[in-house]
Length: 354
Ligand code: GDP
Ligand code: MN
Image 1: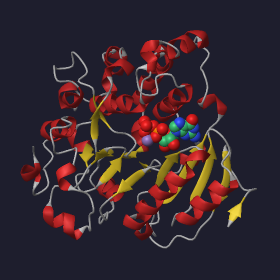
Image 2 (image 1 turned 90 degrees about the vertical axis):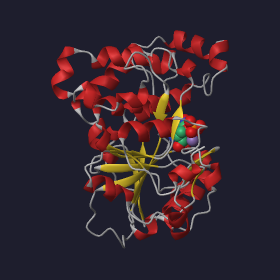
Image 3 (image 1 turned 135 degrees about the horizontal axis):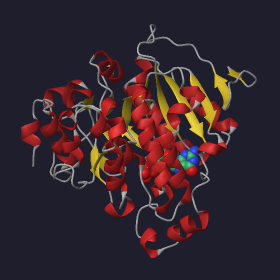
Image 4 (image 1 turned 45 degrees about the horizontal axis):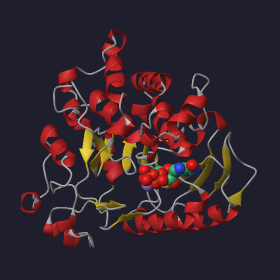
């Protein structure tokens, strides 16, 4: 049932569907997807997998947002694919455009430079709006207001094991505020001044009373030399299950505002992944961050696969444990996280460690 005349500010349509599970709606959470109309097919494939591997048993809502209105086809096909309530929002123009202090000619010159052309999405304006939106605005969209946790989902991702336990509830019940699957290395050329800008913010005496002590933080995940420099590790934010309260906190709001004023979303090409990761690592302690080793997640070439032979069978996985990126030394950031956080590893972790 599509109701077109019953929407909140910025909300395009509200598709109301009967919810069969998650009856007590605890925690109040939603799937969250920012997407273009042109990515419909790839998105339907993502939704189909996550629904059949997980959400058809839990029926969490699914929020879709776009800087342009969604097409009727998009709304019809995605809403029939999800098991919970599907909601569609338009991103307000102020959240997907230049702030007054940005010199747009300078930003364009930078996008046209040879250096920008050498980096992924370096010459793209819309990618920058998207990264800034995911860093600074998505959690303020009125459509997100009622939620406490969200699970970020992109087009073209796969989930190759059943998700047996509810990971959102697992976070909530354990007081965990941020969960990820894969940690990656950022391209240094995209974030030349992000670390020094971030550290100058976090050293500000005015915010110390709201911050946990430096030594209790997980800063060792993102810095291998006691905070001197960034080691480029970041949580791969195209998968993210997290509390919205972290982003809505005073400290994070001040942080991302400070970053925005410094111009790096436009004059460099700061991704939301390193921004989220540096903030999470400085603001949270190890027991508030969780690596989901039991969720098999794949996007582009990177895959995670549970390093536990019995669990792999029980969860009816199709991923190849030998090709996992999180246990192998191909990417050291997952291993670094597990080591620094002290989180226990799955049963056959050491068998697959290469
Ligand atoms: P990558 O994963 O870093 O290669 O970047 P993607 O192209 O997958 O973009 C990340 C997410 O933002 C995806 O869910 C895209 O659908 C979405 N996205 C990227 N650019 C735009 C845009 O211009 N408009 C909208 N509405 N979504 C976008
Ligand atoms: Mn993507």
